[in-house]
Length: 408
Image (cartoon, rainbow, N blue to C red; front, side, top):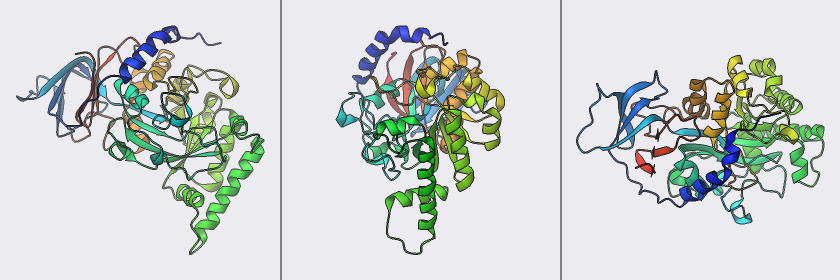
């Protein structure tokens, strides 16, 4: 049985921070000349820099190095903190579709009219001004891979966006990153018993992929948005992200990938530690369940040390905030990572999974994920160890713009 961390005892404090964060004023979108000084700067492109400086011009990182080598020009706004990191990247969320109020008009993450709707676009539902996006931004999350949630055989598409900007067009990096699928009993419970058993689910999915192959082979097919989306998966234009927790569902996902040859991402994977050899051989990326996920139903066998076991085996993975059915509707990805670090995952591996490894997985490492010259200036200043719960995020900079500043 899990020994639940002190974090759960601090729920009232967390909710207080939530509403305070969401009511904080938003800075104007205006790139500045900024100098960031840190007692320790984690660039994620080399060793940490003690007494480091990051210079930001025109929304991008201009120079990074020790203060003895990087002088701060006149006219720069200077921000200081004990710890400095790249912006945090959440590799699986539904924020922007799922809102903070928990009422029907701000819950667009799961369409319940049909269990198979891969054509639903996240960009048509994402709200860049959603208070839940603001809350995560103030906690250092600068980029999210978000969209339609688990719970349908095919619930829809995902996008990658910065947590900054007034509209989805301003925020979006990739408007169509992956298609979200789900295997397991939650699908049938959400759709009145359909599609039914695990075998029936797999038969339906295989049939849709076969239809897509036939659709692709036609010279002038009648437009079919579902089939166009499925063909984009077969052609490698989008990845199939399959939510699967138990061994049986994960193995079914691997067989499906082997049959149709698409690029597979496993999401959830509570029982991944039981399939170390199979997952390593398959070479799939895992978006691991939130470390503190509630252990019931499909997640009964989730463990705090799964991340450490995947890291030891060399299986690529990143972390997620996931989706919660209760307020505040989302977890915080670096809180989840902190518990994994407390249970055997090396500190640097945890930080990489939130930054450069996450950026590489999402295909955006040319823009973000590390503090290097020419990259987007996504920088987070911490008053203490990023994996210590009591360490506040002081300042958040996104695209060279001051997005949050709560310690000064």
